[in-house]
Amino acid sequence: MTQGDLPRSRSDCEALDRADPLAPARAQFALPERVIYLDGHSLGPATHAALTRVERAARTEWAEGLIRSWNTAGWIDLPRSVGAKLARLIGVAAEDVIVTDSVSVNLFKLAAAALPLAKSRTVIVEASEFPTDQYIAEGLSRISGAAMMRVEADQGLAALQRTGGVLIRSIVNYRTSDILDVAASEALARESRGVIVWDLSHATGVLDLKLAADSARLATGCTYKFLNGGPGSPAFVYVQRELAERMQSPISGWFGHADPFAFDAGYAPREGVARFAAGTPGVLSLSALDAALDAFEGLALSDVAAKAKALGDLVIARGAAMGLPSISPKDASRRGGHVSLRHAHGYAVVQALIARGIIPDFRASDAMRFGVAPLYIRFVDVWDAMDQLADILETRAWDRPDFHARAKVT
Ligand SMILES: Cc1ncc(COP(=O)(O)O)c(C=O)c1O
Image (cartoon, rainbow, N blue to C red; front, side, top):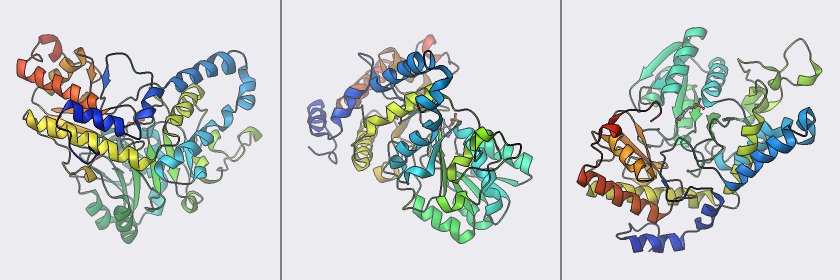
């Protein structure tokens, strides 16, 4: 069997796992026993290296090193050094990435800083976009006076062409997993003198991204999904080098200052993307992320992307056999690292799966989201999870009052 062939049995899956060039990566993850982790994707699992590193950062660097560790343990350089490590995963130069703040805050900073560069003061976002992207666009429009333009799904580029404004857009849609062509979109943006701020949250660590070659100018993305940085680990910012010098962060904090420890009264931005840092970085989270990123070392991103697509094909095929329609593209080249299957009682079905140790997630109103992270998910995992899903549907095991009760986080 090769990854392009759809496995028809568990033993086909075993054959694919034996031939998988990424198979050794799984040993780096501290996965719980008897759990198949198909979260879709909201939180990557811990790596052994990240756990060791957090322990060291807390017990040695913090508890013993105290304030000295900003210099002696390299804390002060972490936003840049972790950014440099992450840069390969998005296909840009090491010095053009910084790790700081959350995606929400970074979207605000980048879109606000992009407004003066765009032909028109318009912030564009699609109604199918992740909610925070829409909320940030609204807030930015409110305080900047820029026009707010919320358009239907897939209409963002057309609106950008019409207006030459600033479009906030995910490469991989959080619900459907649909992907957008970065190079083609950037060509359209340039023609219309508009600017795209890319949200890479569901794309990084699962697609073979080549942002520099595709002429992307501005991007941010989270690190707690496919990058496994841990709950609330800081996001990253990419700014194309020549653009950075022409941009000003609206949050001109001291960590984005050219010389923070000069304690000057006035603000002077740091060189390049580093000006988009704002306040004191979260060292424990950055340390975890730094170590977690080592799981990608030596792996070809083309292998990572190909396996995600093959695993996703299997979810779609098995789902179809159970009568579950996919809202994710069947064409794997148009899909990211998750697949969403629809079921009217999807929330309860997901709870029934979780009760059996299979952990996807759920996105309202009816999407059961299966994340297929290629570094630790095997073909047999997907096969076994789909067997359980079929059983849960056949026996209506999902139809229990406790499975219908909504938790705060889905
Ligand atoms: C596409 C997308 N953008 C942004 C976010 C949220 O980012 P943050 O909580 O870091 O602000 C998420 C979270 O899941 C997401 O999926």
